[in-house]
Image (cartoon, rainbow, N blue to C red; front, side):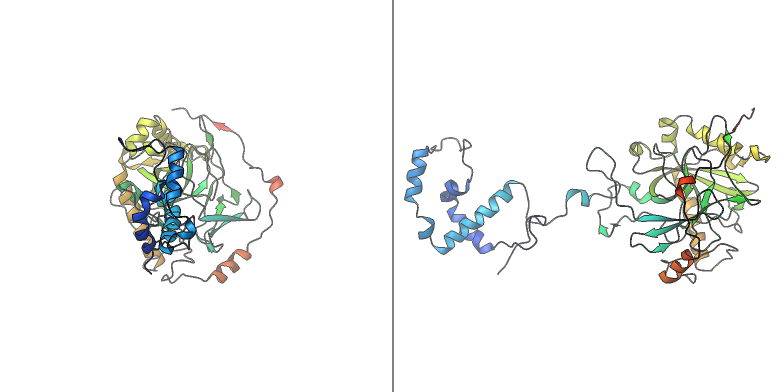
Length: 421
């Protein structure tokens, strides 16, 4: 028997409707009106005879009762009773996913931003604001991973949480990237991916045995953006950049996320790339990507660096000043910039990201000298640095798990530095 797909997969996954029954039902449609509510009411066509309750009763008596109808007729009545309510609701013949599941990631069906299930979570080891503190990453299956090497650079446009999705109808979705948040906005602790440790957890940077905190340079408190990095990128310290004439700083490429929400250390978010700034730090190129969280309420306004100037006036100037002076309170000189401090546009930024991703691939495949960079990974299967999940778990278990959240206050002096210029 030839059967149709379920009309509504959420209603039933097993109901099938006989095409034969539908064919039998068609000749009976004029007679089934009183029984299944076909049309009815005051929506009769112009000039048609309107049935009164009495005439409906006489017509009902003239029709054979259910017990006297042929089996095919009873099947048709049953089929139409099932089908007509479904057809009235607009369900078609093709089984489709709910509307929300068919939208690309980051698209909302309502007024608020789309909230996808978190694909990554973190596990704290040690006491925050101590040299032993580490923040390890896990994937949705609960397996330990490296945020540097195992989180993909690009957002997958064909699948989200294992569910295939349609591509967006414009090219903007093709420029969405994952960002690992290291430092939440307005905080001072200099948290960073530990590039030289296995599985690369986030830790607080130290210098001369002391924990590092960024100074408050008036009028700014701590970092003025959510600060982090793009995974699977690497600024090669042995490769001179053609546009800056300086080598890389041996780190993943940095991101300044300018959205309205204060994020958390260890969050993995999807960002739209808007532009880039070339900081020269002690003779090394230290690129700073300007991006916005795709789930930010204002993200739809931002497409390129000029939109930051338009909708957040003064933010780029503040960014330039912050990066220029933030090391001066430590007794260091002002930082310098390539291109006279000009922010380059989105297209330029995408080329830099592409270049640093190629450097990372060479690093993971052992095609260049990574020095002290630790390339241990769980998901890049063809990499010579690949390890099993059991090996990854043993790495984490070697780190102290003692955690006392009652006394983890940020130990940083609340001093403001006023720099005359």
